[in-house]
Amino acid sequence: MRSAAAIGLPGRSPLLILGILVCVFGSVALMGFLGFILRGIVVDQSTLISEFPTPMYLQSDGTVRATVHVGGPFRLLDANSGKIVSDADYLGKWQLIYFGYTRCPDVCPTELSHIVAALNLMGQRGALITPIFITVDPKRDSAATMAHYVGLFSPRLVGLTGDQQELARVEWEYNVYVLLNPNTVSGNNYDVVHSAYIYLINAKGEVAAIYPPNAEPADLARNWMRQLAAGKV
Ligand code: NI
Figure (cartoon, rainbow, N blue to C red):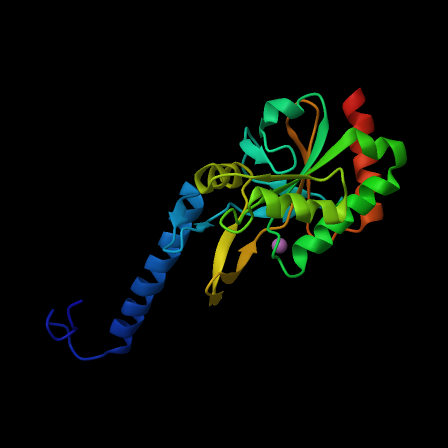
């Protein structure tokens, strides 16, 4: 970058400094804006995916509204069966999809417990919905790791893993934010910052509703009962 003197401007006038500030912050803002527009995927040096998701908004009924189309096909490895499964295998059934990773210290265990508790609260109706946990950390979440982990929550919880590229695509479809926390990296130990929404998928394979983290199981169960009933019409 050329100095102010080299480009023939008088000293450091307040206006020049203001201009530089506007330029610097303007560039940062512009790049951030472009990131939002493009929903670009940036692969960082550790091969984990960071992403600029579009904003999601909490609505008065407790569900979340996305500003872009959310959801789409997937082809991933079912940790329990060892078979590749796709979204087509679940057509005709309702599903809950949650993205996270098995070494998550707090958020994922809480959310998965809430999902299982809410399904239990629904009684027999809960059996109509298949809960699915998709890892955002395939480097450490092998099929064996996932199979063990989901079993800790419920025998009904499906664990899906896959290669980084396919997972990144699915994360993009679902507008999931995934970022390696660089402050926590120590060998194979690191935290992954990720969005923690719960996606309810209807029998047609469409996202019927999105729920924020920390929703109460009773509220989730009530909403899912309503969604199931509405879906029958
Ligand atoms: Ni987590």
